[in-house]
Image (cartoon, rainbow, N blue to C red; front, side, top):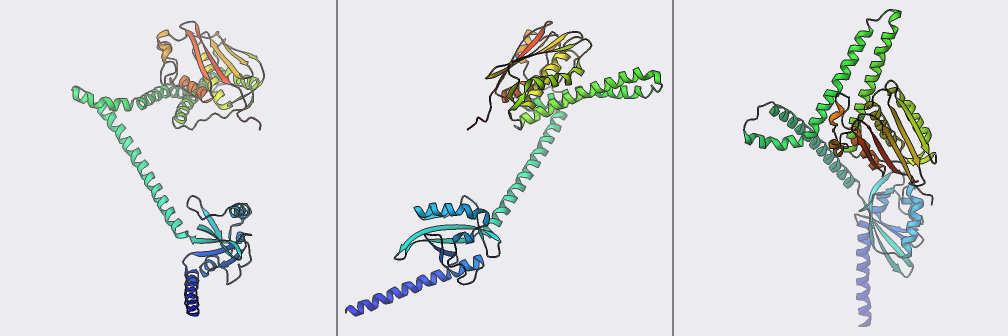
Length: 420
Protein backbone atom coordinates (compact mmCIF):
# COMPACT_ATOMS: atom_id res chain seq x y z
CA UNK A 1 0.00 0.00 0.00
CA UNK A 2 2.81 2.40 0.87
CA UNK A 3 4.51 1.82 -2.48
CA UNK A 4 1.21 2.45 -4.26
CA UNK A 5 0.81 5.83 -2.48
CA UNK A 6 4.33 6.80 -3.46
CA UNK A 7 3.63 5.85 -7.06
CA UNK A 8 0.40 7.85 -7.17
CA UNK A 9 2.11 10.83 -5.55
CA UNK A 10 4.96 10.61 -8.03
CA UNK A 11 2.52 10.49 -10.96
CA UNK A 12 0.66 13.54 -9.63
CA UNK A 13 3.91 15.46 -9.20
CA UNK A 14 4.99 14.45 -12.69
CA UNK A 15 1.73 15.74 -14.17
CA UNK A 16 2.09 18.99 -12.22
CA UNK A 17 5.63 19.43 -13.45
CA UNK A 18 4.56 18.68 -17.01
CA UNK A 19 1.71 21.19 -16.75
CA UNK A 20 4.00 23.86 -15.29
CA UNK A 21 6.57 23.14 -17.98
CA UNK A 22 3.86 23.46 -20.66
CA UNK A 23 2.61 26.71 -19.16
CA UNK A 24 6.17 28.03 -19.04
CA UNK A 25 6.97 27.05 -22.62
CA UNK A 26 3.67 28.05 -24.20
CA UNK A 27 2.86 31.20 -22.18
CA UNK A 28 1.98 34.21 -24.34
CA UNK A 29 3.95 36.44 -21.96
CA UNK A 30 7.73 36.53 -21.78
CA UNK A 31 8.93 34.97 -18.53
CA UNK A 32 12.40 35.79 -17.19
CA UNK A 33 13.72 34.40 -13.89
CA UNK A 34 16.65 36.10 -12.12
CA UNK A 35 18.44 35.27 -8.91
CA UNK A 36 19.19 37.66 -6.07
CA UNK A 37 22.33 38.85 -7.85
CA UNK A 38 20.24 40.00 -10.82
CA UNK A 39 21.55 37.20 -13.06
CA UNK A 40 19.21 35.55 -15.56
CA UNK A 41 18.81 31.86 -14.72
CA UNK A 42 15.82 30.88 -16.85
CA UNK A 43 13.55 32.29 -19.56
CA UNK A 44 10.78 30.86 -21.69
CA UNK A 45 10.60 30.69 -25.51
CA UNK A 46 8.32 33.76 -25.66
CA UNK A 47 10.95 35.82 -23.82
CA UNK A 48 13.66 34.68 -26.22
CA UNK A 49 11.37 35.61 -29.12
CA UNK A 50 10.63 39.06 -27.64
CA UNK A 51 14.29 39.89 -27.07
CA UNK A 52 15.66 38.17 -30.18
CA UNK A 53 18.04 35.72 -28.48
CA UNK A 54 18.65 32.03 -29.21
CA UNK A 55 18.26 29.24 -26.67
CA UNK A 56 20.60 29.82 -23.72
CA UNK A 57 22.37 33.00 -24.89
CA UNK A 58 20.90 35.03 -22.02
CA UNK A 59 21.52 32.52 -19.24
CA UNK A 60 24.13 33.88 -16.85
CA UNK A 61 23.82 37.51 -18.03
CA UNK A 62 22.62 40.39 -15.91
CA UNK A 63 19.02 41.51 -16.31
CA UNK A 64 20.37 44.95 -17.41
CA UNK A 65 21.22 43.24 -20.74
CA UNK A 66 17.52 43.58 -21.58
CA UNK A 67 17.26 47.25 -20.54
CA UNK A 68 18.12 50.26 -22.79
CA UNK A 69 21.59 51.60 -22.07
CA UNK A 70 20.36 55.01 -20.89
CA UNK A 71 18.44 53.32 -18.06
CA UNK A 72 20.76 50.39 -17.27
CA UNK A 73 23.02 52.14 -14.74
CA UNK A 74 20.10 53.47 -12.70
CA UNK A 75 18.33 50.12 -12.93
CA UNK A 76 21.12 48.43 -10.96
CA UNK A 77 20.32 50.53 -7.87
CA UNK A 78 16.57 50.04 -8.41
CA UNK A 79 17.06 46.29 -8.69
CA UNK A 80 19.26 46.08 -5.57
CA UNK A 81 16.74 48.14 -3.62
CA UNK A 82 13.88 45.88 -4.74
CA UNK A 83 15.73 42.68 -3.88
CA UNK A 84 16.29 43.93 -0.31
CA UNK A 85 12.54 43.58 0.29
CA UNK A 86 11.00 41.87 -2.77
CA UNK A 87 7.25 41.86 -3.22
CA UNK A 88 4.78 41.18 -6.01
CA UNK A 89 4.19 44.34 -8.05
CA UNK A 90 3.29 45.54 -11.51
CA UNK A 91 5.29 48.06 -13.54
CA UNK A 92 4.52 50.17 -16.58
CA UNK A 93 0.94 51.23 -15.80
CA UNK A 94 1.83 54.74 -14.61
CA UNK A 95 5.09 55.16 -16.54
CA UNK A 96 6.64 54.26 -19.88
CA UNK A 97 8.96 51.23 -19.68
CA UNK A 98 11.18 50.06 -22.54
CA UNK A 99 13.12 46.86 -23.19
CA UNK A 100 16.09 46.25 -25.50
CA UNK A 101 16.39 43.51 -28.09
CA UNK A 102 19.63 41.82 -29.08
CA UNK A 103 19.90 44.07 -32.17
CA UNK A 104 19.71 47.18 -29.97
CA UNK A 105 16.16 48.16 -30.94
CA UNK A 106 13.72 49.09 -28.19
CA UNK A 107 10.05 48.36 -27.57
CA UNK A 108 7.53 49.39 -24.88
CA UNK A 109 6.66 46.81 -22.23
CA UNK A 110 4.66 46.14 -19.11
CA UNK A 111 6.39 44.11 -16.41
CA UNK A 112 5.09 42.23 -13.36
CA UNK A 113 7.48 41.03 -10.68
CA UNK A 114 6.91 38.11 -8.30
CA UNK A 115 9.54 36.91 -5.79
CA UNK A 116 9.79 33.24 -4.73
CA UNK A 117 12.14 30.95 -2.83
CA UNK A 118 13.42 27.45 -3.50
CA UNK A 119 16.04 25.26 -1.92
CA UNK A 120 18.52 26.95 -4.30
CA UNK A 121 17.82 30.42 -2.93
CA UNK A 122 15.69 33.50 -3.66
CA UNK A 123 14.51 34.38 -7.17
CA UNK A 124 12.30 36.88 -8.95
CA UNK A 125 10.17 35.97 -11.93
CA UNK A 126 9.37 38.76 -14.39
CA UNK A 127 6.36 38.57 -16.69
CA UNK A 128 7.02 40.76 -19.75
CA UNK A 129 4.33 41.93 -22.19
CA UNK A 130 5.13 43.71 -25.46
CA UNK A 131 2.64 46.63 -25.59
CA UNK A 132 3.78 48.12 -28.90
CA UNK A 133 0.36 47.73 -30.51
CA UNK A 134 -1.40 49.14 -27.46
CA UNK A 135 0.89 52.19 -27.51
CA UNK A 136 0.17 52.70 -31.19
CA UNK A 137 -3.53 52.58 -30.44
CA UNK A 138 -3.13 55.00 -27.53
CA UNK A 139 -1.18 57.38 -29.77
CA UNK A 140 -3.90 57.14 -32.41
CA UNK A 141 -6.48 57.99 -29.73
CA UNK A 142 -4.38 60.92 -28.51
CA UNK A 143 -3.97 62.20 -32.07
CA UNK A 144 -7.69 61.84 -32.63
CA UNK A 145 -8.43 63.77 -29.42
CA UNK A 146 -6.02 66.51 -30.46
CA UNK A 147 -7.72 66.72 -33.83
CA UNK A 148 -11.12 66.94 -32.10
CA UNK A 149 -9.81 69.70 -29.84
CA UNK A 150 -8.45 71.55 -32.85
CA UNK A 151 -11.78 71.25 -34.64
CA UNK A 152 -13.60 72.42 -31.50
CA UNK A 153 -11.29 75.43 -31.22
CA UNK A 154 -11.84 76.32 -34.87
CA UNK A 155 -15.58 75.94 -34.41
CA UNK A 156 -15.56 78.12 -31.30
CA UNK A 157 -13.54 80.75 -33.13
CA UNK A 158 -15.96 80.67 -36.03
CA UNK A 159 -18.93 80.93 -33.68
CA UNK A 160 -17.30 83.83 -31.81
CA UNK A 161 -16.58 85.65 -35.07
CA UNK A 162 -20.10 85.08 -36.28
CA UNK A 163 -21.50 86.24 -32.93
CA UNK A 164 -19.52 89.45 -33.15
CA UNK A 165 -20.69 90.10 -36.71
CA UNK A 166 -24.26 89.49 -35.64
CA UNK A 167 -23.92 91.84 -32.67
CA UNK A 168 -22.58 94.60 -34.90
CA UNK A 169 -25.48 94.15 -37.32
CA UNK A 170 -28.02 94.25 -34.50
CA UNK A 171 -26.51 97.45 -33.08
CA UNK A 172 -27.31 99.23 -36.34
CA UNK A 173 -30.99 98.45 -35.93
CA UNK A 174 -33.07 101.05 -34.14
CA UNK A 175 -34.07 99.49 -30.86
CA UNK A 176 -37.58 100.58 -30.00
CA UNK A 177 -39.08 97.65 -28.12
CA UNK A 178 -38.24 96.88 -24.52
CA UNK A 179 -38.14 93.13 -25.17
CA UNK A 180 -35.43 93.54 -27.83
CA UNK A 181 -33.41 95.81 -25.52
CA UNK A 182 -33.47 93.19 -22.75
CA UNK A 183 -32.39 90.46 -25.18
CA UNK A 184 -29.41 92.49 -26.34
CA UNK A 185 -28.32 93.67 -22.91
CA UNK A 186 -26.40 90.54 -22.07
CA UNK A 187 -24.74 90.53 -25.48
CA UNK A 188 -23.57 94.11 -24.93
CA UNK A 189 -22.03 93.17 -21.59
CA UNK A 190 -20.18 90.20 -23.05
CA UNK A 191 -18.79 92.25 -25.90
CA UNK A 192 -18.09 95.39 -23.87
CA UNK A 193 -14.38 94.74 -23.60
CA UNK A 194 -13.99 93.89 -27.26
CA UNK A 195 -15.97 96.95 -28.32
CA UNK A 196 -13.76 99.24 -26.22
CA UNK A 197 -10.66 97.68 -27.70
CA UNK A 198 -11.84 98.12 -31.30
CA UNK A 199 -13.04 101.70 -30.71
CA UNK A 200 -9.85 102.85 -29.04
CA UNK A 201 -7.61 101.10 -31.56
CA UNK A 202 -9.49 102.68 -34.48
CA UNK A 203 -9.31 106.15 -32.95
CA UNK A 204 -5.69 105.97 -31.81
CA UNK A 205 -4.39 104.60 -35.11
CA UNK A 206 -6.38 106.90 -37.39
CA UNK A 207 -4.80 110.19 -36.26
CA UNK A 208 -1.13 109.04 -36.18
CA UNK A 209 -1.44 107.37 -39.57
CA UNK A 210 -2.93 110.53 -41.04
CA UNK A 211 -0.02 112.52 -39.57
CA UNK A 212 2.54 110.14 -41.07
CA UNK A 213 0.85 110.28 -44.48
CA UNK A 214 0.66 114.06 -44.41
CA UNK A 215 4.28 114.53 -43.35
CA UNK A 216 5.54 111.98 -45.89
CA UNK A 217 3.64 113.82 -48.65
CA UNK A 218 5.03 117.21 -47.60
CA UNK A 219 8.63 115.97 -47.43
CA UNK A 220 8.43 115.19 -51.13
CA UNK A 221 7.73 118.85 -51.89
CA UNK A 222 10.88 120.11 -50.17
CA UNK A 223 13.54 119.21 -52.72
CA UNK A 224 15.81 122.22 -52.32
CA UNK A 225 18.78 122.38 -49.94
CA UNK A 226 17.34 125.37 -48.12
CA UNK A 227 14.25 123.29 -47.29
CA UNK A 228 16.30 120.94 -45.05
CA UNK A 229 14.88 122.41 -41.83
CA UNK A 230 11.32 121.84 -43.05
CA UNK A 231 12.16 118.27 -44.08
CA UNK A 232 13.68 117.55 -40.67
CA UNK A 233 10.60 118.98 -38.97
CA UNK A 234 8.38 116.45 -40.75
CA UNK A 235 10.88 113.63 -40.16
CA UNK A 236 10.67 114.38 -36.43
CA UNK A 237 6.88 114.33 -36.62
CA UNK A 238 6.98 110.93 -38.33
CA UNK A 239 9.41 109.53 -35.71
CA UNK A 240 7.33 110.86 -32.84
CA UNK A 241 4.14 109.46 -34.34
CA UNK A 242 5.71 106.04 -34.95
CA UNK A 243 6.86 106.01 -31.30
CA UNK A 244 3.27 106.70 -30.19
CA UNK A 245 1.95 103.90 -32.39
CA UNK A 246 4.60 101.54 -30.98
CA UNK A 247 3.48 102.39 -27.43
CA UNK A 248 -0.15 101.68 -28.34
CA UNK A 249 0.74 98.33 -29.91
CA UNK A 250 2.91 97.42 -26.89
CA UNK A 251 -0.04 98.18 -24.59
CA UNK A 252 -2.36 95.94 -26.60
CA UNK A 253 0.23 93.14 -26.71
CA UNK A 254 0.86 93.42 -22.97
CA UNK A 255 -2.87 93.17 -22.20
CA UNK A 256 -3.14 90.09 -24.43
CA UNK A 257 -0.22 88.36 -22.72
CA UNK A 258 -1.59 89.21 -19.27
CA UNK A 259 -5.02 87.80 -20.20
CA UNK A 260 -3.41 84.58 -21.40
CA UNK A 261 -1.24 84.24 -18.27
CA UNK A 262 1.97 84.34 -20.31
CA UNK A 263 3.67 87.05 -18.24
CA UNK A 264 5.81 85.94 -15.29
CA UNK A 265 8.24 87.74 -12.99
CA UNK A 266 11.83 86.45 -13.20
CA UNK A 267 14.04 88.51 -10.87
CA UNK A 268 17.72 88.84 -11.82
CA UNK A 269 20.58 90.70 -10.17
CA UNK A 270 20.37 94.18 -11.72
CA UNK A 271 22.56 97.28 -11.48
CA UNK A 272 19.53 99.48 -10.91
CA UNK A 273 21.27 102.85 -11.06
CA UNK A 274 22.76 102.14 -14.50
CA UNK A 275 19.45 100.62 -15.60
CA UNK A 276 17.51 103.78 -14.65
CA UNK A 277 20.09 106.10 -16.21
CA UNK A 278 19.94 104.17 -19.48
CA UNK A 279 16.13 104.26 -19.49
CA UNK A 280 16.11 108.03 -18.87
CA UNK A 281 18.49 108.60 -21.79
CA UNK A 282 16.23 106.47 -23.98
CA UNK A 283 13.07 108.34 -23.02
CA UNK A 284 14.59 111.82 -22.98
CA UNK A 285 13.87 112.16 -26.70
CA UNK A 286 10.12 112.19 -25.93
CA UNK A 287 10.40 115.32 -23.76
CA UNK A 288 8.63 118.46 -24.83
CA UNK A 289 10.50 121.73 -25.16
CA UNK A 290 12.05 122.77 -21.86
CA UNK A 291 11.08 119.59 -19.99
CA UNK A 292 13.87 118.11 -17.87
CA UNK A 293 14.12 114.62 -16.37
CA UNK A 294 15.74 114.63 -12.91
CA UNK A 295 17.09 111.42 -11.37
CA UNK A 296 17.85 110.83 -7.67
CA UNK A 297 19.24 107.53 -6.34
CA UNK A 298 19.90 106.34 -2.76
CA UNK A 299 21.14 102.97 -1.49
CA UNK A 300 22.78 99.88 -2.96
CA UNK A 301 23.22 99.95 -6.75
CA UNK A 302 22.45 96.22 -7.24
CA UNK A 303 18.99 94.74 -6.61
CA UNK A 304 16.98 91.63 -7.52
CA UNK A 305 14.22 92.63 -9.98
CA UNK A 306 12.62 91.61 -13.27
CA UNK A 307 14.31 94.06 -15.63
CA UNK A 308 11.81 93.75 -18.50
CA UNK A 309 8.70 94.24 -16.35
CA UNK A 310 10.34 97.14 -14.48
CA UNK A 311 11.37 98.76 -17.75
CA UNK A 312 7.78 98.66 -19.02
CA UNK A 313 6.48 100.09 -15.72
CA UNK A 314 8.94 103.01 -15.58
CA UNK A 315 8.67 103.72 -19.31
CA UNK A 316 4.90 103.92 -18.97
CA UNK A 317 4.97 106.20 -15.90
CA UNK A 318 7.68 108.51 -17.27
CA UNK A 319 6.09 108.79 -20.72
CA UNK A 320 2.76 109.62 -19.04
CA UNK A 321 4.50 112.30 -16.96
CA UNK A 322 5.93 113.80 -20.16
CA UNK A 323 2.65 113.49 -22.05
CA UNK A 324 0.46 115.07 -19.38
CA UNK A 325 2.87 117.90 -18.44
CA UNK A 326 3.27 121.22 -20.21
CA UNK A 327 6.56 122.26 -21.88
CA UNK A 328 9.14 123.52 -19.38
CA UNK A 329 7.80 121.46 -16.44
CA UNK A 330 10.30 119.23 -14.54
CA UNK A 331 9.82 115.47 -14.05
CA UNK A 332 11.45 113.48 -11.27
CA UNK A 333 12.44 109.82 -10.89
CA UNK A 334 13.53 109.00 -7.34
CA UNK A 335 14.83 105.61 -6.20
CA UNK A 336 15.54 104.49 -2.63
CA UNK A 337 16.99 101.00 -2.13
CA UNK A 338 16.89 99.28 1.27
CA UNK A 339 18.02 95.70 2.11
CA UNK A 340 14.49 94.33 1.73
CA UNK A 341 12.67 96.72 -0.58
CA UNK A 342 13.05 99.07 -3.52
CA UNK A 343 11.05 102.29 -3.40
CA UNK A 344 10.48 104.32 -6.56
CA UNK A 345 8.70 107.60 -7.17
CA UNK A 346 7.72 109.32 -10.44
CA UNK A 347 6.58 112.91 -9.95
CA UNK A 348 5.30 115.44 -12.46
CA UNK A 349 3.72 118.89 -12.31
CA UNK A 350 1.21 118.25 -15.07
CA UNK A 351 -2.56 118.39 -15.39
CA UNK A 352 -3.13 115.96 -12.49
CA UNK A 353 -6.10 113.63 -12.02
CA UNK A 354 -9.51 114.95 -10.91
CA UNK A 355 -10.67 113.61 -7.55
CA UNK A 356 -13.80 112.00 -9.01
CA UNK A 357 -11.65 110.02 -11.49
CA UNK A 358 -8.97 108.78 -9.11
CA UNK A 359 -10.81 105.61 -8.03
CA UNK A 360 -10.86 104.44 -11.67
CA UNK A 361 -7.23 105.27 -12.58
CA UNK A 362 -6.13 101.61 -12.76
CA UNK A 363 -9.28 100.44 -14.61
CA UNK A 364 -8.72 99.13 -18.11
CA UNK A 365 -9.56 101.63 -20.91
CA UNK A 366 -10.24 104.41 -18.39
CA UNK A 367 -9.11 107.94 -19.20
CA UNK A 368 -9.61 110.93 -16.91
CA UNK A 369 -12.05 113.65 -17.96
CA UNK A 370 -9.28 116.23 -18.30
CA UNK A 371 -7.20 114.08 -20.72
CA UNK A 372 -8.79 115.90 -23.66
CA UNK A 373 -7.15 115.18 -27.02
CA UNK A 374 -3.94 113.81 -25.52
CA UNK A 375 -3.26 110.46 -27.14
CA UNK A 376 -3.68 107.34 -25.01
CA UNK A 377 -5.44 103.99 -24.80
CA UNK A 378 -6.37 103.95 -21.12
CA UNK A 379 -4.42 100.69 -20.77
CA UNK A 380 -1.05 101.88 -19.46
CA UNK A 381 -1.80 102.20 -15.76
CA UNK A 382 -3.75 98.94 -15.74
CA UNK A 383 -0.66 97.23 -17.19
CA UNK A 384 1.55 98.97 -14.62
CA UNK A 385 -0.61 97.69 -11.76
CA UNK A 386 -0.60 94.13 -13.14
CA UNK A 387 3.19 94.10 -13.66
CA UNK A 388 3.84 95.47 -10.17
CA UNK A 389 1.53 92.81 -8.73
CA UNK A 390 3.41 90.08 -10.65
CA UNK A 391 6.65 91.36 -9.09
CA UNK A 392 5.10 91.10 -5.61
CA UNK A 393 4.92 94.85 -5.04
CA UNK A 394 2.34 97.60 -4.87
CA UNK A 395 1.73 100.91 -6.61
CA UNK A 396 -0.07 103.96 -5.16
CA UNK A 397 -0.44 107.59 -6.16
CA UNK A 398 -1.47 111.04 -4.99
CA UNK A 399 -2.70 113.68 -7.39
CA UNK A 400 -4.34 117.06 -7.57
CA UNK A 401 -5.95 118.42 -10.72
CA UNK A 402 -3.79 121.18 -12.19
CA UNK A 403 -0.86 120.55 -9.81
CA UNK A 404 0.58 117.19 -10.86
CA UNK A 405 0.80 113.55 -9.79
CA UNK A 406 3.17 111.32 -7.81
CA UNK A 407 3.21 107.57 -8.43
CA UNK A 408 4.94 105.47 -5.73
CA UNK A 409 6.16 101.90 -6.23
CA UNK A 410 7.28 99.49 -3.51
CA UNK A 411 9.00 96.26 -4.66
CA UNK A 412 10.65 93.38 -2.77
CA UNK A 413 14.43 93.12 -3.08
CA UNK A 414 15.72 89.63 -2.39
CA UNK A 415 17.41 86.73 -4.14
CA UNK A 416 14.61 84.30 -5.20
CA UNK A 417 17.13 81.44 -5.21
CA UNK A 418 18.90 81.55 -1.80
CA UNK A 419 22.12 79.60 -1.48
CA UNK A 420 21.81 76.09 -0.05
